[in-house]
Image (tube, rainbow, N blue to C red; front, side, top):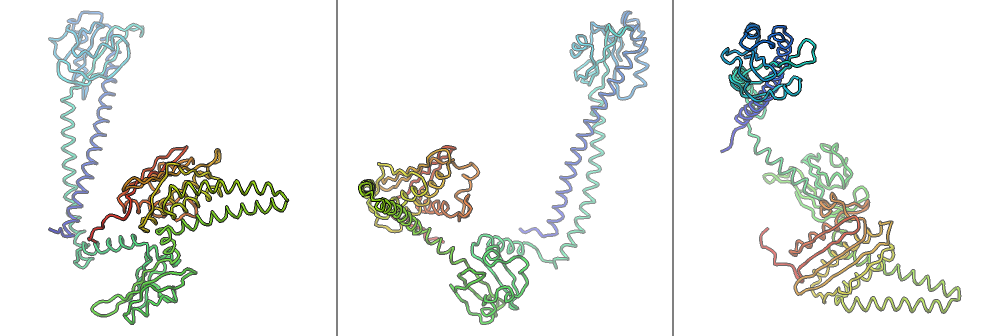
Length: 534
């Protein structure tokens, strides 16, 4: 059952007022009780100081307890004192010289909290169970006239029952104030709810709020730009991606689309009611791919909406998904390394160092043959072998030594989609490892690579000796768009995680200040059967 807005406001205000009043009351009472306890303690100590300096007390402690001299003086003072239930004067053995119950004179003080005053002549506060009940007691030493010799002490107490009675009265007063405030708050909430209901023309906000949340969530989740106009050509909707792609801001809302985007064609689509799909156009120097659709209501066009995306980003994403850019980078690095070696040979020939040139060529040939032989013997798929060979060259180009584990092996791959998946994962992981190792100034950069095929599973391991990944970055590095590089797209690790999860694999990362290891397990062959659901 839906609760009406008016009821929500009234109930909400009651809850808020109730909670705030209870919290305020609790804090106020707590503070007042603390202050009350402190005030009582100060009062007890003050009275104890006065009693300890009375001549009748100092001289009376020289007599026997039943002399009554101290008892009479204290009882007179007790009648005039407020918030004090008893004043007891004792000698150094704890024998009472005064007490509200005269029959207890000459007997030891009860409670056991007077030991400290006998040992150390300093005033203090204590709570203990005495003859009259649980009480807060102040102990004050009594000195002879020379102010050096302690001859006894004074215990001034207030019973807890007296304090509780005062607290009950205080709490009762606060409860009355609380309910009075709640009644006033309910009346105010009722008046406020009626005014708000009237301002909304009697409509409940649930449906409006639902549409707003859905629209906002959808616009925020879209990486495509979205721009909508009404039947007058005014911009009514503009999400964040559209602002970035079209170089617009919030001030564009409400403006004529033709003044903002001269070739948007949205007014034409709104007028004709005919949609246009996958159209390329240039906006602010960017080539974007646009879909334009009319907004129809009861068969009549009320505006148009366009979704668009940067064509360059689409191409880059496609390349990353297929692994094309990884192969291109590998070929470029191999070509660059080959050209460097040709330049070296050319230089030796020009210097007439024919023997040195010959030795250099033979050395290169041997190293290359050894590497090629090992790679193509262990890597039966030429795409993967070519990729690794290119990454070895890329590492040399950047001053990083890349080692391929002798235990690495993988069979031929007939499924090109799976081959592209491995190219994406291997290429991005090795590139990141080379980048990390290259930026380590205090040691030679090194990247170790291992790939092995075990029945229906492929295991990958990429290790570098860079400076590691911080804990903060470890939590974010697989998020789309996150990158620590100034020119990075933040798509590499995101695509890796996506490809691995798509094939029910997993990836582990172990990193410290000396190295980082990425370990990947991925099912061999085609993807798992996909669900027919949406």
